[in-house]
Length: 81
Image (cartoon, helix red, strand yellow):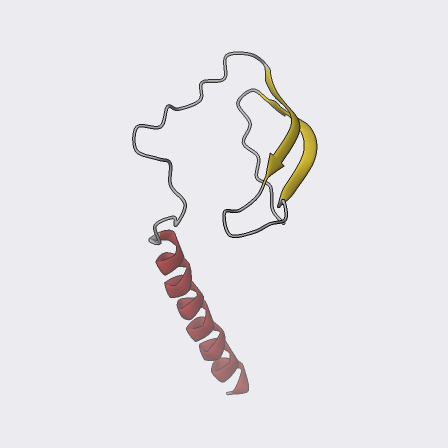
């Protein structure tokens, strides 16, 4: 009997996770491109970024300070702090 109770609990947990995941997939991004933004077309085998500096409008400190990196063509990257 304990086996079936535990199995039921696991199934309920899975259903709840599925609902949360479904809701996450339906969430619109809060960061979007500006209207009329031109899509970057990568025609070379790589894009090189040199001495990148970025800070948020409401901050005095840079979030990214003088970083360098190369992105191979067809790849997507994300900077996460």
